[in-house]
Every structure is written in structure tokens, then in C-alpha cells.
Image (cartoon, rainbow, N blue to C red):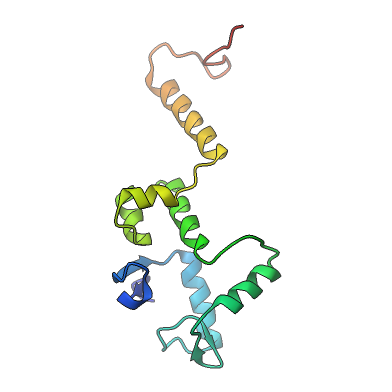
Length: 148
């Protein structure tokens, strides 16, 4: 908690490679709140009656049902993390280390590119060109036009 990292041991990861995952402020806060309800002296976050869960599938299904989320698997969280890291602007090498991808091919497979990503890319290019191209049209005038 003090270092704000979660340690994943070899047996905890898909690739059997240990790694350190940094906590976001929200994760740290959630764990602090959890520590007021039960001891965090165990290395397991998910417990039931003081014992670590061997499988979280039932609890995960219950949480999905209560949140009205359909067609979602636990592994989809890894896809979400990869996509959110990219959208937040985290460089590829750092993001790959956090989620545990060893190849850029796998990193690309886990990233979802949606229409909003493409729209944001166009907006970034437009802003860049406005700021860095001499004689660029002002904001009130369209930067391009379509003719028939």
C-alpha cells in the first residue's frame, strides 16, 4: 500500500512472469476502505469468510448481474485496461509492462479502436495543424471543404 503497487507473483499471471502493477488513486482508496472492513494481512484481495476465493467466477457473475452488464468475461478486464492505457496516452512499452504483454502483436490484439478514437485522432491532427502550420485558416473557417 505504501508504494502503491500490487505485486503479481508468477502463479498469479497468465504468462507466469511476476510483475508490479501500479495502483490508481481509486484502487488505493478502494483497498483502504476494504481494510476498514477486514484485515489486508493476507495477499488475497478476494476472500469469503476469511478464506481466499479459489475461483471468482460465481462472484463475478453475481456482480455483472447486479450491475446489469451482459456479454462480459473476466478476461475482458485486461482488454479494457490495455485500451484505457492507450487512450490515456501511456506509452506502449510501459502499458505492455503493466498488463503483461510480451509482444506488440499481442498488445495490438488487446486494443479496441472505436469510432471515437478515430474522431479524437482527427481532432488532434486538426489542432496540431492549426498550431504548427503557417497561414492555416482560423478556427471560424473550416480547415477543409468537400466539393462535388
